[in-house]
Image 1 (spheres, chains in turn green, brown, yellow, orange):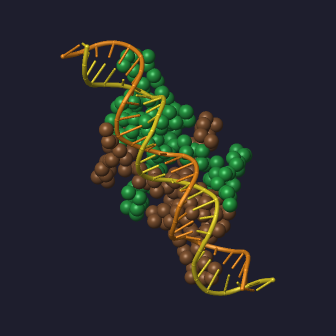
Image 2: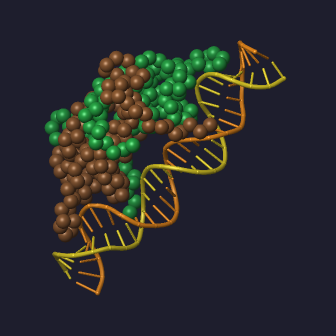
Image 3: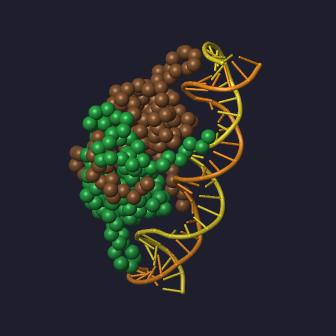
Length: 128
Length: 128
DNA sequence: CTCAATGGTCTGATTTTTCATACTGGGTCC
DNA sequence: GGACCCAGTATGAAAAATCAGACCATTGAG
């Protein structure tokens, strides 16, 4: 049985399909936001850029283990979703700076909640 | 140049490497928590289980598009990280129920922040 | 002249993820 | 006897992610 293709659902603004109460969270619609902010180095990039704008090379140096290709890709993704802003200067050698947009800055409350959760429960996490 | 292998860093409890101020978030340590709660259907599962415990088959029915293998894997992962609790009953036919642990319930504040962010910015997200 | 530096792109290979399908086992229904 | 139910596991193939390394164009340093 083929069952992997899901056709996109359409949602009303305040629908909370399958959730209880007005506080509940609409799960499937969520996936778009999840995909936008998770990804191999996205959260790490956002956390670093909180400090201020940074050039590509400097960002690369602060993320040991990231491939140039990967970083390019993640930054492009973040820029496409309006989370970071890419400023390319027409200089030689080229200079490109990345900074958080307002949407990126507004991720902080969520990241802080995530951090609080981590501090409380990281001892029981089995993932490496 | 081989640069993909990162050796695990060790952190003090309150270290916030490369972050500004006491509110800042320690990026690399974060990855463990990120991996524990993201993943193809994890957040969706948590959101559904907020309503109450559910059997495997029912969970599967509520996540159109998920493979049996995938669901098994994600649930095992969530259980290993202590986010959901797996209750297997020795009956015929077998019955297995999944429910949120306290750690799972405590994810809600973060999920709510994520939802608020999504409601504010989803219009600009390009990901499908 | 040669080399390094920047922020990428491109290529082909390898690794990882994800899939569809088939199978289990004991009870129950026909 | 045969089919179905449930909650998985096993398998091999297909698809996607990720990698290392080469390349680009330009300038300045030695």
